[in-house]
Length: 344
Image 1 (tube, rainbow, N blue to C red):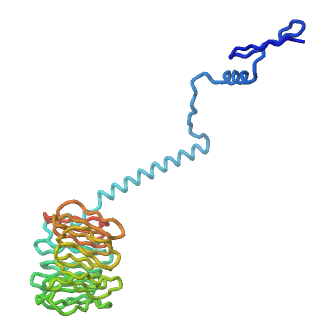
Image 2 (image 1 turned 30 degrees about the vertical axis):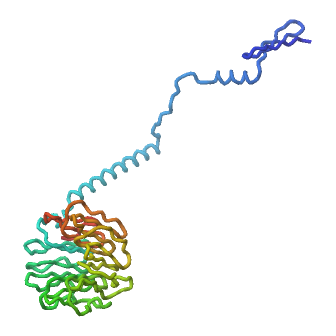
Image 3 (image 1 turned 135 degrees about the vertical axis):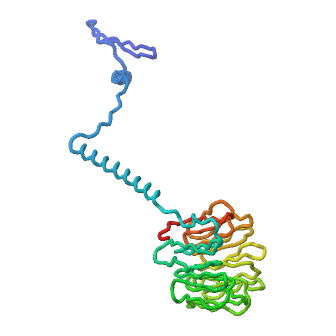
């Protein structure tokens, strides 16, 4: 029987075995040690070689090359067209005006009156009237498919649909709604003409200082400062809060007014709460509202998309649908929003 001796040291743990003839069977190692040594021998003791990405060869390589070339050409052509259109796009006609007196913006078109009384108009969308009558105007007010201008002699001239022919008489101010127009006469009464499907062109009797036409409703400020509205009231647009007002602006389904303390209050639907502060003027449109503060900065709110006005000092602001324009203190006009001019 052979004698087995165990080594008591920690590493390595070995054992010697000999047969009765004195033959050495070798050193015996525990199996875990053998596995560790085998793994160490298999390690690649050299700098690893990272695989290289070579282009595919053969038919697939040619196809890949054509695809890359076509994509590169398409991107280059796209950049060329974008830069070309940007350089060839005509500037807005309002950018040429440096002496604006008033401005009127609607969802499809806009007009501005210069200091010499001439009117400059442009379109946001096709199919809407943009031409004005020759002559000198104090102001221009636009509807959806018509426009009216107040001349220096107090008469009113309208263009567009034949139904919007203005009545005779002397007016001090006018305001076009979507499909009708109203004006304050020299005697402080209100006369309206055009579409009267919801009673928006049937004003009450009384003495007024200003009037504003909306889509299917009209609002005015009486001489005692109260706000009076008539026409469609399905959204509450003709139910003003009590109080005294300096001015009023009727929009699509809502109305806003500046109170005597110059705060803004709005009523109707589709309208967020107005911002705080004191205002010189306010303009309502299809969905959003903009106002000129006492410091002549412009702030906007409401609508389906944000309308961030530019910085600067403004004297007037007019709101359409996706576009807004304002007259700066130096007489220039700035427009923002969707202001791609289709026809000048």
